[in-house]
Image (cartoon, rainbow, N blue to C red):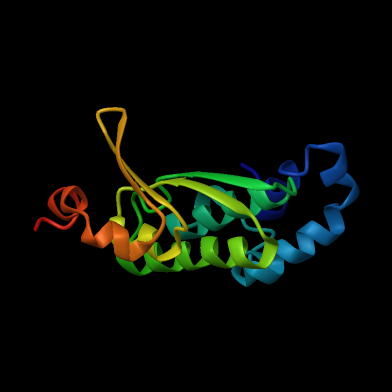
Amino acid sequence: RLSVEQNLRLGAYRATARAALPQNLALTYELFPRLAERRAQLVGSMSGGEQQMVALGRALMSAPRILLVDEPSVGLAPILVARTMEMIAEMKSRLGLTVLMAEQNFHQAVRIADRGYVIVHGHIEFEAESASAMHENDLVRQIYLGL
Protein backbone atom coordinates (compact mmCIF):
# COMPACT_ATOMS: atom_id res chain seq x y z
CA ARG A 1 0.00 0.00 0.00
CA LEU A 2 2.86 2.33 -0.76
CA SER A 3 3.06 4.98 -3.44
CA VAL A 4 5.72 5.03 -6.13
CA GLU A 5 7.72 7.69 -4.30
CA GLN A 6 7.45 5.90 -0.95
CA ASN A 7 8.75 2.72 -2.60
CA LEU A 8 11.64 4.58 -4.20
CA ARG A 9 12.61 6.25 -0.94
CA LEU A 10 12.76 2.82 0.73
CA GLY A 11 15.61 1.98 -1.64
CA ALA A 12 17.80 4.67 -0.05
CA TYR A 13 18.41 2.66 3.10
CA ARG A 14 22.22 2.94 3.19
CA ALA A 15 23.69 6.06 4.81
CA THR A 16 25.48 7.10 1.61
CA ALA A 17 22.27 6.63 -0.39
CA ARG A 18 20.26 8.65 2.15
CA ALA A 19 22.75 11.50 1.80
CA ALA A 20 22.29 11.46 -1.98
CA LEU A 21 18.52 10.85 -1.87
CA PRO A 22 17.46 14.03 -3.73
CA GLN A 23 19.97 13.45 -6.53
CA ASN A 24 19.17 9.74 -6.82
CA LEU A 25 15.44 10.44 -6.85
CA ALA A 26 15.90 13.03 -9.61
CA LEU A 27 18.03 10.56 -11.60
CA THR A 28 15.46 7.80 -11.16
CA TYR A 29 12.68 10.07 -12.38
CA GLU A 30 14.86 11.13 -15.31
CA LEU A 31 15.49 7.50 -16.30
CA PHE A 32 11.87 6.52 -15.66
CA PRO A 33 9.70 9.57 -16.49
CA ARG A 34 6.55 7.48 -16.13
CA LEU A 35 7.35 7.05 -12.43
CA ALA A 36 7.61 10.82 -12.02
CA GLU A 37 4.15 11.16 -13.56
CA ARG A 38 2.77 8.56 -11.16
CA ARG A 39 4.76 9.32 -8.02
CA ALA A 40 1.63 9.44 -5.83
CA GLN A 41 0.00 6.32 -7.32
CA LEU A 42 -0.12 3.13 -5.28
CA VAL A 43 2.28 0.62 -6.78
CA GLY A 44 -0.18 -2.24 -6.33
CA SER A 45 -2.53 -0.60 -8.82
CA MET A 46 0.12 -0.38 -11.56
CA SER A 47 0.75 -2.70 -14.50
CA GLY A 48 3.46 -5.36 -14.37
CA GLY A 49 5.78 -3.27 -16.53
CA GLU A 50 5.31 -0.22 -14.33
CA GLN A 51 5.95 -2.31 -11.21
CA GLN A 52 9.16 -3.54 -12.85
CA MET A 53 10.18 0.11 -13.34
CA VAL A 54 9.53 0.76 -9.65
CA ALA A 55 11.68 -2.23 -8.69
CA LEU A 56 14.54 -1.05 -10.91
CA GLY A 57 14.15 2.52 -9.64
CA ARG A 58 14.16 1.36 -6.02
CA ALA A 59 17.38 -0.54 -6.71
CA LEU A 60 18.94 2.62 -8.19
CA MET A 61 18.05 4.58 -5.07
CA SER A 62 20.61 2.55 -3.10
CA ALA A 63 23.39 3.93 -5.37
CA PRO A 64 24.62 0.43 -6.29
CA ARG A 65 27.83 -0.51 -8.07
CA ILE A 66 26.32 -3.83 -9.15
CA LEU A 67 22.71 -4.56 -10.08
CA LEU A 68 21.44 -8.12 -9.64
CA VAL A 69 18.39 -8.78 -11.81
CA ASP A 70 16.50 -12.08 -11.76
CA GLU A 71 14.25 -12.79 -14.74
CA PRO A 72 13.17 -9.21 -15.49
CA SER A 73 11.00 -10.38 -18.40
CA VAL A 74 8.81 -12.83 -16.46
CA GLY A 75 5.12 -12.05 -16.83
CA LEU A 76 5.58 -9.04 -19.08
CA ALA A 77 4.06 -8.41 -22.50
CA PRO A 78 6.64 -8.64 -25.32
CA ILE A 79 6.70 -4.86 -25.85
CA LEU A 80 7.38 -4.38 -22.14
CA VAL A 81 10.14 -6.99 -22.18
CA ALA A 82 11.98 -5.01 -24.84
CA ARG A 83 11.47 -1.74 -22.93
CA THR A 84 12.63 -3.29 -19.64
CA MET A 85 15.82 -4.55 -21.28
CA GLU A 86 16.38 -1.10 -22.82
CA MET A 87 16.04 0.44 -19.34
CA ILE A 88 18.56 -2.00 -17.89
CA ALA A 89 20.97 -1.28 -20.76
CA GLU A 90 20.57 2.47 -20.24
CA MET A 91 21.20 2.16 -16.49
CA LYS A 92 24.28 0.08 -17.25
CA SER A 93 25.75 2.52 -19.74
CA ARG A 94 24.81 5.81 -18.06
CA LEU A 95 25.73 4.84 -14.54
CA GLY A 96 28.59 2.46 -15.25
CA LEU A 97 26.81 -0.31 -13.38
CA THR A 98 27.84 -3.91 -13.50
CA VAL A 99 24.70 -5.92 -14.22
CA LEU A 100 24.38 -9.58 -13.28
CA MET A 101 21.20 -10.90 -14.84
CA ALA A 102 19.58 -14.32 -14.92
CA GLU A 103 17.24 -14.40 -17.91
CA GLN A 104 15.62 -17.12 -19.99
CA ASN A 105 14.82 -14.78 -22.89
CA PHE A 106 18.07 -15.34 -24.78
CA HIS A 107 17.38 -12.89 -27.59
CA GLN A 108 16.73 -9.98 -25.24
CA ALA A 109 19.48 -10.75 -22.74
CA VAL A 110 22.23 -11.19 -25.31
CA ARG A 111 21.61 -7.68 -26.65
CA ILE A 112 22.92 -6.07 -23.47
CA ALA A 113 25.30 -8.74 -22.23
CA ASP A 114 29.05 -8.26 -22.20
CA ARG A 115 29.45 -11.89 -21.25
CA GLY A 116 27.07 -14.84 -21.29
CA TYR A 117 26.84 -18.16 -19.54
CA VAL A 118 24.69 -21.20 -20.29
CA ILE A 119 23.84 -23.01 -17.09
CA VAL A 120 22.37 -26.51 -17.34
CA HIS A 121 21.22 -28.21 -14.14
CA GLY A 122 23.29 -25.83 -12.04
CA HIS A 123 26.55 -26.22 -13.97
CA ILE A 124 28.12 -23.75 -16.37
CA GLU A 125 28.18 -25.58 -19.70
CA PHE A 126 29.34 -22.68 -21.86
CA GLU A 127 30.53 -19.10 -21.52
CA ALA A 128 31.29 -16.44 -24.09
CA GLU A 129 32.33 -12.81 -24.24
CA SER A 130 30.19 -11.74 -27.19
CA ALA A 131 26.72 -12.08 -28.64
CA SER A 132 28.11 -13.58 -31.85
CA ALA A 133 30.01 -16.25 -29.89
CA MET A 134 26.79 -17.12 -28.06
CA HIS A 135 24.87 -17.40 -31.35
CA GLU A 136 27.56 -19.59 -32.93
CA ASN A 137 27.77 -22.14 -30.13
CA ASP A 138 26.03 -25.47 -30.85
CA LEU A 139 24.74 -25.87 -27.27
CA VAL A 140 23.23 -22.39 -27.29
CA ARG A 141 21.74 -22.94 -30.74
CA GLN A 142 20.15 -26.19 -29.58
CA ILE A 143 18.83 -25.03 -26.20
CA TYR A 144 17.80 -21.44 -26.88
CA LEU A 145 17.41 -21.12 -30.62
CA GLY A 146 15.94 -24.55 -31.37
CA LEU A 147 18.40 -25.17 -34.20
